[in-house]
Figure 1 (cartoon, rainbow, N blue to C red):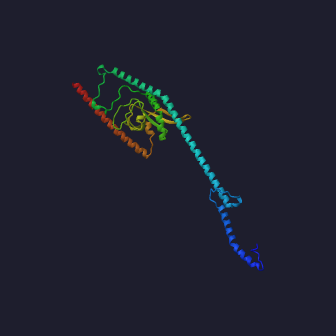
Figure 2: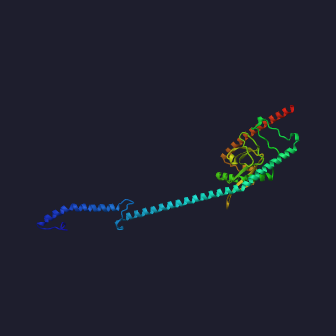
Figure 3: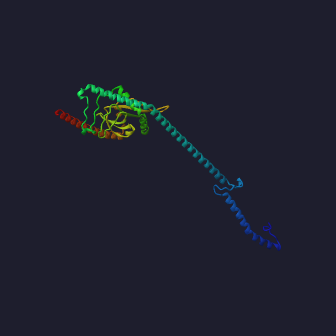
Length: 329
């Protein structure tokens, strides 16, 4: 105050000179205080320094702090919801896997005795065929002649004896498909379909021919196409040793079965019903890609049929020449 008030007399000049000397020091002190205050307000995010009071913050600073707190809360809530959804999805997948394992174990326990009964019934059926064939032929011709060495193993052997028909054939076909229900359900789930036409052997043909499937009792085939000459094209679903094999097969000695996947309170089950071969064509799509695929499969079946006929003709010729030589002897 003495520096600001004007003084008269001899001491006025000395006081003004003293104020002029103190002015730079006071200005430097004020600059230091302003810099400290600015540094306190503009501290970096996450700093551990505590603000003395809320009055030291301006409105923009308070709003920025509130906004950061809100964003952090929203981010934490989103992470919590995503983690909870993932845990629930993993729990559902685990429960479904446990149910599938339980179904497989139950099916194995249920159908293993039936499979043994099926094999026993097949053996009894074959034995009855052999006894009937032996009683109908003369005793001199009862013993079968060994096939010529040149016919093994390429010649297709024709089925002999009586074959099942009607309801008995349908029952055996349904029983065979039921034994392989797990393989059928697995294919329908992987393919994303609900209904397919299957073929089960009743009196299979023991053949080794180009592009012709060698089927056996207890096998299940997926029918993909059929023609008017009694041939089909399909994929083997069971047994597991031949699963995935694709090729042609004759409809003789086979029985068609319709398999439809249905949902039940206890889970998914397959409904099996006898059907006709015409259902294979009805289930075919009508798009351009489906028509091209059908044409390719028909060509493949025609080639297999021609190879089959050539082998049958060669086998007949060799058998006739063998009988002629035996008669001349």
